[in-house]
Image (cartoon, rainbow, N blue to C red; front, side):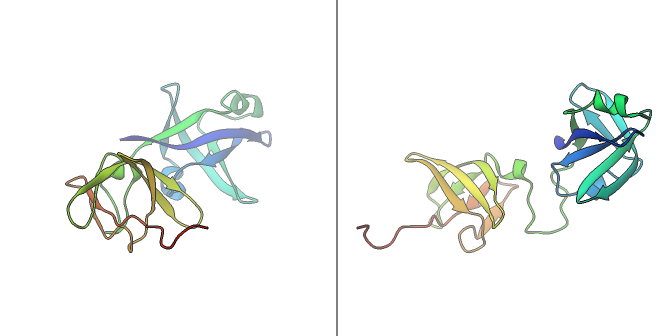
Length: 166
């Protein structure tokens, strides 16, 4: 599956390097020297250099040797072919594997459908479309005990509000 992995930012220096806005959990793999990324204009760029400077990823691409050339590519989106079924951990899921899954209660009753995964600093949230509207469920084992991406089913325990509001 073709997935967005980054965006070319400003030029850095005079030799054709660019800052990269990383949009992948695996930048070392996606932007390794020799890797090829696709662009939103259906072109390809081969990575020939990469380094981190002040916390920002800088990349150089084959055939781009000056500041003016890389500046023309500013805001270009970068894509990679990713096998979303390839994971290193049983508790690791790709967003695209979760979207569209049925969210069911422990009783087996359908609660809704997962429409998005919202990445927050503390934890991810599952956005579930229900008959009452969108419900957000923290993506933690206590509230999402079972994820079956093969059968497109996720068991959820929606948080409830206890007590009365004043």
